[in-house]
Length: 277
Figure 1 (cartoon, helix red, strand yellow):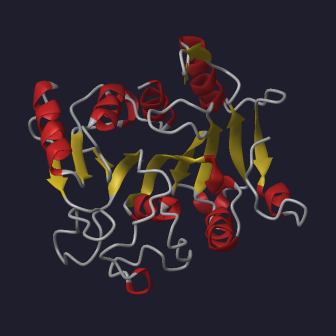
Figure 2 (tube, rainbow, N blue to C red; figure 1 turned 90 degrees about the vertical axis):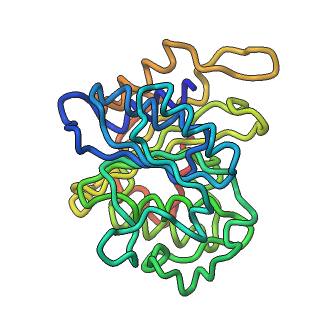
């Protein structure tokens, strides 16, 4: 839940830039908590839409929306990668786009391409970026999110740390994303934060607005700030505040945060590796 709060805050949504027609979407919405966090940050009643693969969980999400006074939120049930249900009203052939997209997809989904022929994806999600490896679905979700963001829209996605440095097909996709300037920031999180997995994760922030002019990626290595809670690690209030404050003000802090120029990332010795340390 702490990570959901960070995502809702760093995505930049607030009362100053939202209206009733502002839209937020989660392609792997689970029980809907991330969408509700974003709505809470917005401070106004915005439009919420989400898709969830599991029938029971999708039902939970619908109930959750009603309980939080979001009866108008639309939750659809189905496989987002194989059958995205939020599509452009006119043609039905394009993905619907949103002001804000947030997601915590399944890590390294080995079955991401089930029911999908990525090479001929009708929604063009992989065009110009590349096709993720058969057994690692992380970039498939990230590219779906990117396709679902309006030209001025923002996105935030939790992915395993490996997306920052794994090579081959993922290295090629990462290079394309960096060259197009769509990655605004990366926040590295402590290991052991999530139930069911001990692997460290990161938040990748996407921002289409001003992508062409973007000359760097703001990186935060927040992997050391946490407290032990039995077998799990937890972000304390001060850790959360430090991440959000540093990202919002874009301040450089030694061994913690700085704006890393694309020129440095693309240098042959780094070769588009985004590994934070």
